[in-house]
Length: 174
Figure (cartoon, rainbow, N blue to C red):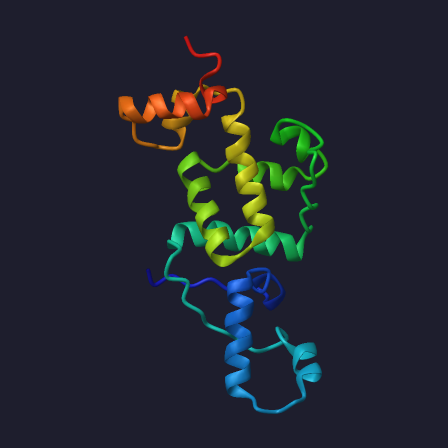
């Protein structure tokens, strides 16, 4: 889309897609076996320009914001199971920036963030975005989940098969 974003090397390589791309570019540019010295100096002054074609500019701006905060301000605590709560406010009580970051995004952007984090292989961002989606699905009926996830309606035959194979999905429906 023509927009560009700058971020520190350390933030950029939180994305395995970016890290692997830069590693390939570096190995193409340098045939020396002096990798230790090269890795120590990465990010100090070199500028890399990468296209991330499968991520919209608007979404990429949110990804960059997350990555910069993660490196420059405060790494996000790893999400371990069982979670220390059932809602985002509780789970991120000690890290309000992350709580606010993910709760202030509208649902459609959260779904785009899930796709971007998955494509770019940014595990911590994927974790927090999936957590947001999952907390929105807790306690919902199959129909409410279908609407939230923009899933097509099942045909009567598909619904009958689903009710037989997965009756728990339809529990609590009237």
